[in-house]
Length: 361
Image (tube, rainbow, N blue to C red):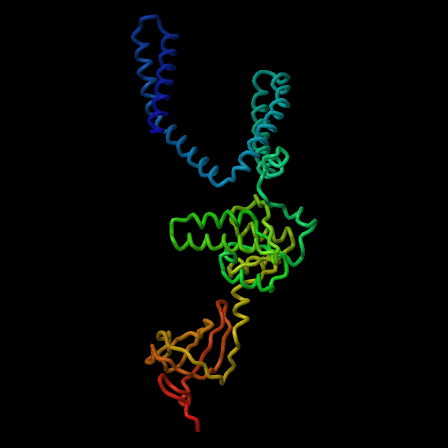
């Protein structure tokens, strides 16, 4: 519908232009006036379709950008753009007056464009301060620079994966995390987006993350603060987190292994809940007997794979035919991988098999 209406307006404009040009260059009543109007209409019809589609595409991009931008930044950016754009217009008027001919107009246009662009960027970056000065900001958020004067060195930035992980609530309320937990606003926005997802699983995860943060904020034993600091130079949430952690000189709390590697490469300390849970698992030394149910065959011929109660994977030689049975193999070695600890074991003929009782001597 937009393309058709825009094309109609362009056709009417081109028809009027063709009629006016033909009438000014010929005598009244000349048939060339009609010809000029028809040619203008044809030109407007052809060009109007192209222009209308380009306009619709451009408006779609603008709409997508506006949807990604928080309302506060739009309001602050609009105010900043109008202010600096107006000042640039005032500064550019002397160029139009003093420069000969039309040469001053490009200078005026350039100054106004620079003012609008820089004004919007500065206004968007300082949107919260501008709204607070106008008494329009009611959000109970703080900036790290105003949080206790200085951010504590043992404070941790929390990402969405850690917020969704239920273990965060347990270890924090148990007192294992002494430092303050800092949740940036853009992480809350990410959790809100997950909670509003169409997929039920993602929606449950997002809501669980918001509920966990709400529980932590209501616990007097936990120091949790929501930061309003923005990182406009990056769009990805992970990049924003790393940049903000470096700026505040604090660590990151996450379960994302890839984020951990990127952050550590940039000098940011990371506490990974998965690594913490892995380090809390009991260490099984070679020669120890473990008991579990073989769940599936392994990759190599004859191997059987199962899992201990704590989730540790065990690969047993010669146990491929024992899928579904509970066995008690003897550990031969253990390997630490990027995803956790893995045990290798062999069947122990002296250990009790499924349904058997160990001999008492």
